[in-house]
Image 1 (cartoon, rainbow, N blue to C red):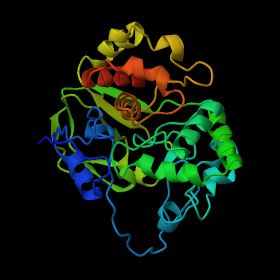
Image 2 (image 1 turned 60 degrees about the vertical axis):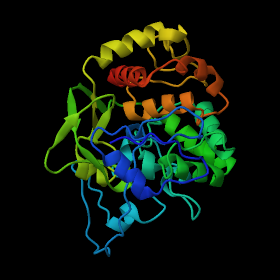
Image 3 (image 1 turned 120 degrees about the vertical axis):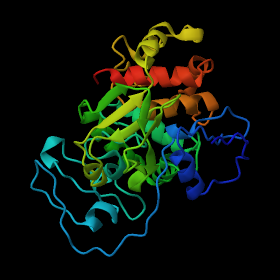
Length: 332
């Protein structure tokens, strides 16, 4: 299945259409933003499904390794977030754990250790100035969702609702959390068939069906039920095309057609340099690929985007998959 038509940027895809696009086997369904920008592949923009919640019966949910227990309402239905392992990270400021009536707490989607998920990205250890710049870009409409609805759609609204002090508190908190290894990269000719689920989690088909991977990255939770409970200790496995890690390493170190190696700005170890160039090592390959597609299409057009545009201009979809696979395979 392939959707090649251009869609005017003023039209909004419904959640159902987006969910069907992502669910398609090996789909390369695309929706570009803006209308005259290069196309972007659906797999890099995970979509979720909305299900009307059943009445909360008061059941307490538990995880191994912690005495904490929470109800469905605490996990999913309030703007504050839960903290399964409160002793594993610094004390969280209100924007990260409490939220307000205007926005959900940052820890809801990025999780309390900042590790995030493929649709939200990893904030651990990122420079304060870099995080504040991203919030400023969102607040001032310099970052646009390539798919609507998307996680970025909600993030733009949050960025607009945060006060400068709240933004700084959140940025300083996530900067203080040391990175942990949470991605297992597996080269494979095929990958699990997935369907959109709650919290934008991609759920493996119950039948265990697999499909050719093609030019995609398929990233799924190591333990779906724990991820549904917003467990920050559960990692992800990323299926990538055979040979992509070696090809990606060559591109990262040579710069490919642009001749601008990633190491020139992001450091020899790819763990970042200064405030403008964040760490790339060990992050979700889905999230990294999405950023590269957004730089290439122009939907990510913030203050520091100018430095990335010539780097990604000549990258093909295959190149972006390869680079993301290699970067994700590194230790953070």
